[in-house]
Length: 234
Image (cartoon, rainbow, N blue to C red; front, side, top):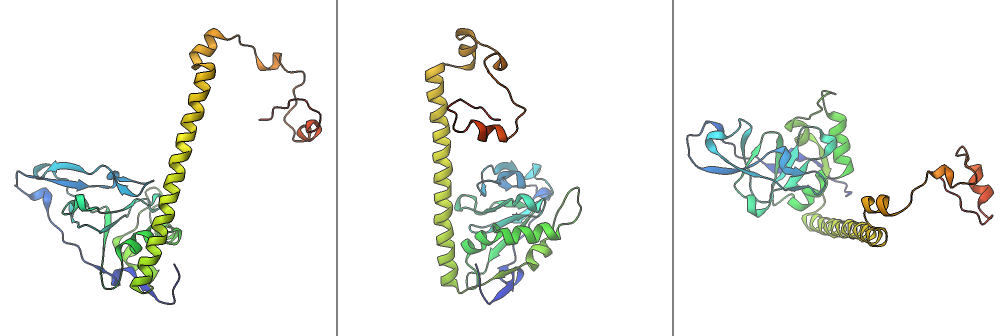
C-alpha cells in the first residue's frame, strides 16, 4: 500500500451515531458487540450477544452499520479489529472500539479494513499507546493516524488482492490442521492410545536402550552423520 498521497484517517470517515442504551426503559433487546466478541486471529465478530436494554452496560453506546470497521483501543498490540457484517447491521458497539465509517467517495471500507490490520498501523498504535500496565490509545490517536490513499479503483484492486491472499492463507491453515489430525489418526491406528501403549507394550527407560549418551554438543551430530548409527538429538 504505497502512494504519494497520505491523509489522516479522521478526514476520511464519517461520524457514528451514539445512544444511551443503558438508560433506556425499552423492554426490547439488541445485539451488543464488545471487545471479547472479536476473534483476534480471524478478525471477525464471532460472539456478539443479545442483551436487554435494561441490562445494557454503560459502554454500549455506538450504533454501527454494515461495513463499519471496529478498532479496539485497548491493547493495540493484539489488533482486535473487525468489520461489521450485514447480519449485525444496527447493532450497538462498545465505546472500547473506535468505529470507522469510511466515506464512500474517498475511502473503500475493504481497503480501510486491510489497512488497520497492517503492520504499519499496528506499530503506530503500539508506539503511541499509554499506560504500560494496560496499554491503550484514544479515538483521537486512531483518527490522527496517516494512511496512503490511492484512487478508489486502486483501493478496490489492492483490497481484492489482499482478500485472495488471506483466503489462501486460511486454506493453508485448514490443510495443516487436517494433516495434523490425519497424522494423529495414523499413529492411533498403528499403536493405539497412550493408555493402550502403556498397558500392552513393554516400556524401558531411554538410557537403558542407548549405547552412548552425549551432553548434547552439536559436534556429535557431525561425527555420527555418516556412520550409519542412529543419532537422537533434542
